[in-house]
Length: 110
Length: 114
Image (cartoon, rainbow over all chains, first blue to last red):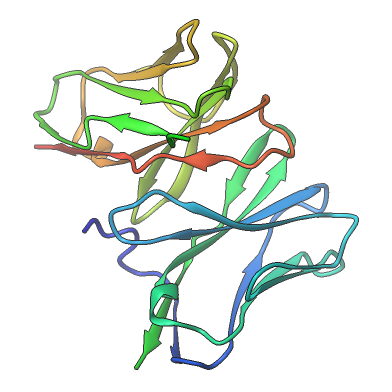
């Protein structure tokens, strides 16, 4: 499939472990954030979102944490599975446009 | 419900040619945004259309243009192709104009310029 990014930071985790993917965003005025997952040959898929008036939001096996003080966003994946292997992007809504982070490649080891 | 459909999925062009890419949004979605994805620059915003009007434009040269039709389908065009235009072009739709709305992406059109 297509290569999303050849020189992305890579996180390798053992199957069954928890994964934490971090993102530093740029703009303190950003008020809405989304995490996307992109598998090879596919477009980005929505995982979870969070508004700036929250600091934590949970979904199925995923949790997003927002620290506005240091402009940091993290995605936690519980019990990581082989199907979680992908590139993960954070996106911040700044003004009227989404600005995407560079992405992190998650590799799940058997 | 059908997702965002982009055509063609793959295409090869030579320098100087032009290309038109098509995007059909999710039924009922009125906003369509286009992004360029490359290994070096990541996801870069090209433009957004809502109700046939361009609302926002990214920092790309005038060779990149787009339009939206009354049925919300959108096309983007790149003229006088350069090698650096080789990329995955992603279309995303949302129900309303870009704001705190989730973007739903298509699978992309992979353009290779030789």
